[in-house]
Image (cartoon, rainbow, N blue to C red):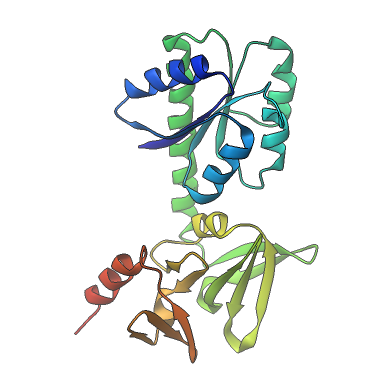
Length: 235
């Protein structure tokens, strides 16, 4: 299932793409947005795989919006103008659809998205066999072993990776981005601001997790997933 959003200031364009998405059982429309500012909040708070993005919009163009995102989803430009193709190429967009957009051409773009996401999943699966990740911090790429990570703490646009021996690595990226790069069988999101090493959990006390004598909160949206992991490992 692909989670998608449409970003366009023209109601008719939104209606057309929404009607196309409704025909596809394997594509979920999370939100239709009439501006880049509205879309920014959605991309920041939701897991979006694919964005259909208009270029010519008031306040902030689609190109400006895409350049502002640190970890954008797959992007398909939708525009009435053909002279932005080079910008799309330079920004590594998935596809470039000229209005009026036919359903057949729309389907080609969606199929590209499925192919790309399957390729990304294969890369992640291969990466899970590794025992480390490289993180950009202080103008360096620092090697961080999964076994050394106690937990990850979110702080606005930064994340702090807390490790054994009181070490830490601070990197400029979102929790959502780092979470997608960490092996799911080793790490669990327990709160908007915390990801923990599953094997580092020493105790679950009410709505708190204890790791290395530190008590971290469990968010209500993550409690069920965490307790499921705990119950699977109970005696």
